[in-house]
Length: 268
Image (cartoon, rainbow, N blue to C red):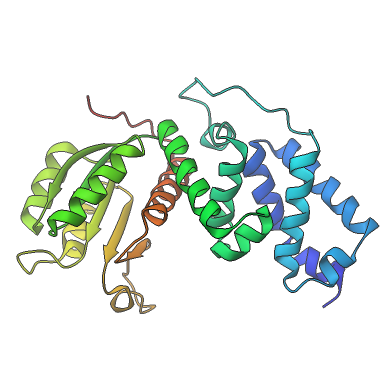
């Protein structure tokens, strides 16, 4: 594949990343244009790379970090500001780490290469971005989990991200009661519950009455990733890394708000 073909293949996604990173179509495209100009001057940057896509994003990152096309903004205060723009107010490097992993789907090793950092630093940045983004889109969270210590870990993690935990349900019936009473903005659900019931069944029942983003956490993800429908859209395997949970929570809420733009408030 030629350099031009490789770049053309990845260009729409680079533009998406740039716009999310800057919070502006005009500014994002200006950065992409500058990166392409640099690539024309030295096409070997991509043509001789092991991964043209990683090389292209790495080149873009060097441009982003060195050229002040995008004026750095003050923190957002307007809750009605579109979430794409509010994302632009997260500290730059954590924002890059979050978007590379959550939006662009890069493996941790590739995202770290793009940012010229190690994987541990990348994970810390993603976790930081989760806290900063959660402050912008905080919501009420229901945890459906029958293992006490895992539930405690999730509760602490969610609260550290700036969200409010409505409660922890250990069974199907408890989950239904809590959700119908308090209407969460996000659900974290185990699939196999203490009484032998299914968190998946509980969630499917709740989704018949109202819409809410859901993240499933299970020790057996392969049982639910069969390619058949219905299956969980967001799935985290146990044992989980806190940074993974943070990134997925932020990803789910970011794109749910982007699609629907509701204004949920955290319970007092």
